[in-house]
Amino acid sequence: MSGSTAAPEKPAQLDERLVHTSPLRKLLGRPELGSVVGAVAVFVFFSIVADSFLQASSLGTVLYAASVLGIMAAPVALLMIGGEFDLSAGVLVTSSALISSMFSYQMTANVWVGVLVSLLVTLAIGAFNGFMLTRTKLPSFIITLGTFLMLTGLNLGFTKLISGTVSTKAIGDMEGFDSAHALFASTLTIGGVEFKVTILWWIALVALATWILLRTRFGNWIFAVGGAADAARAVGVPVIRTKIGLYLGVAFAAWISGQHLLFSYDVVQSGEGVGNELTYIIAAVIGGCLITGGYGSAIGSAVGAFIFGMTSKGIVYAEWNPDWFKFFLGAMLLLATLLNAWVRKRAEATT
Image (cartoon, rainbow, N blue to C red; front, side, top):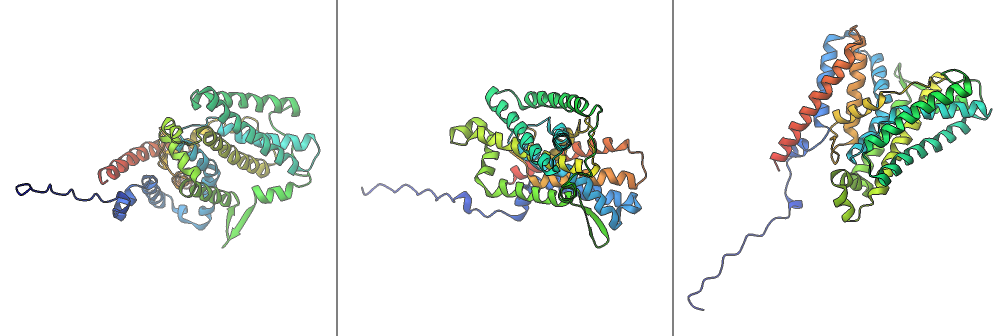
């Protein structure tokens, strides 16, 4: 028609995947940013107040303290990203060591037989946690608290029943002990500085966890079930399999830590490990993991563990009362959580 005018065309919307993201926005979106800032602050602080903190020999000690925690913090971080907790992780480490030691000693077998039996039993306990969680629909807090209490009682009860004391028998003279010690508890000397092999285990587990999170379908499932399990299930994510897999990951790390505990000291005290599960969670939270799930990184858990190592040993190097350690750890947890929340808000504001 002669008098009609064509309606103006709407500008085509640009695909958000093609929108350029500035380096600053990418940096603000990283969950471990707050923990990195905190780690730098802790490092500078103890470098000033503790003269021996910067010595080369101190580096190996700090990294060892961080690695012992970091081995467990990495799978715990993945579990938290998946929206769950494991309050039995600390005593599970001790259970793993006790099973390996007592089976080897009582069966008079090569210690590697005990190590393998320990692996199977530890994984079975992890699978039990995941199975009970997905079948009963109870909160993971309740499920793993029950497992924590049962394992605490079993560790003490079986150790007293079998060995007559609260500690295991020495297995240092058994066949296979030296090779197992080399794998789980040896010391490497590099440039005159001693480094425990647990540092290599820690690096390997963090690298594996990061690859799983960022490069695999299972990593996408972890974020999905942690953010909204029902929505994830609706689009075909195997929620049950994912959560059981996460608990198996925690159990595997507990087995590694347990073997390190055993082959470092030859004997194991049945009451060890209680309370360590909170430290693993703290390291993950400091590293940027949300309590509500769906957000975090394995690298952040490594930074959180490194902060723990610097703080625990920095207080010693500064010749302070070690009672201050828990205060610093609590303050670091609070400050890191507040900083992480601020970083997320800034990242959301720039999108």
